[in-house]
Length: 336
Image (cartoon, rainbow, N blue to C red):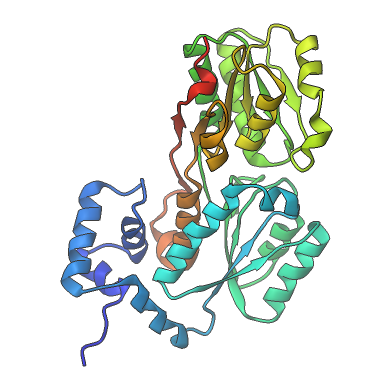
């Protein structure tokens, strides 16, 4: 009986790395249509199906990839961003015969304890951090261990010669693009809404917003809201607007914060824009303009990097993979 084809067979036939084949299979925006067509033709020629790669499980001594989620459970459970990241990771892991396990915790100490347990049991040697924060004790511990592969989704706090490998959007540019978009729609004084600037993704988007404001010769303003307990935000937006009457638009660091603003203001008077292009943005009233950062592909790229570690590190001239972003225009920014 002929052996079933593997993803490595497809890669050999088309003359590409297995990670490139994986991305093409899953329709990554980083892969050209010509490459995707070539990969699909090779898959058909070899009668390859990703489900067949499960046969590789028995041959792997360490076939687990550990996903490390942020310590705050409320941020994770209420945000579809993390579900889409896990789906992207899962697709690549399934294609390569890897299984997933998750480390989580109510706080940094509990998360660190659970991550240490996975490492000490010897089951997990590959980790994907689904977040990036400044001075992260969990990342610092993983970096201190030998023979571990790890990738961060998000830009690491400390960049340099020995920094970790990461997958991210260009969030500074995304923040700048979002601000310039609102200017183009006729808004004149947008403000930035965030929950935690210790999260690199939020601070980078804020920096992009600041840069776009300075180009216009404007002072930046900001509003901090609580992402885990929206009830604490009641009245904060109105208080902010009384203190900053010239503000006519809001750029929120994610859709959930944008929707919190939307609930507190008259939508016809203010432009509102969020990030992540979540299902909540699509079904809100009015529908929310949002920057799609393609979290599914962030997960996909992170998994491809950590699984094909040796291959990728030899070929990457930089220590990062940058996934593009796109502004999805809806009614919340159409009132000017």
